[in-house]
Length: 100
Image (cartoon, rainbow, N blue to C red; front, side):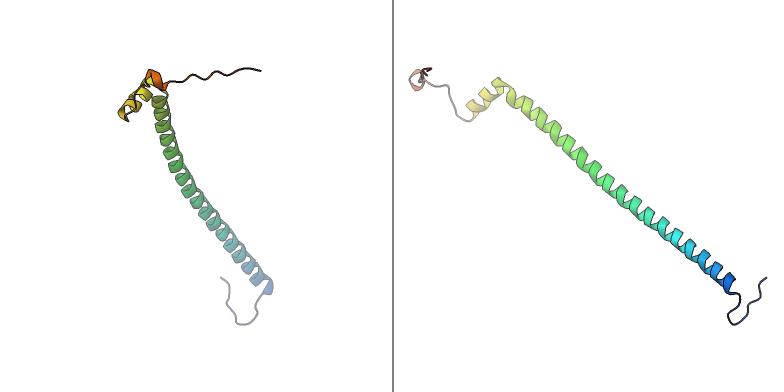
């Protein structure tokens, strides 16, 4: 065992002990920092994943709605439902366009 003495003691040995403790502290801080970065990335990935699922669901709903709206029979049904009727003969006008 080492004898504990008052005073300066062995400066070289004290400096080595200080360096070892310093490097251990630095390594511990780096490990903690990396772990915090990993946790932040995990939260960000989770948030993005939720957002992606929501956007895909919205896209699917919009695609179904687009298919529904492209159907001519559906447009006709909606027009009749809103009170629109087919035009009478006197309401139709034909425009002749002359080419130059």
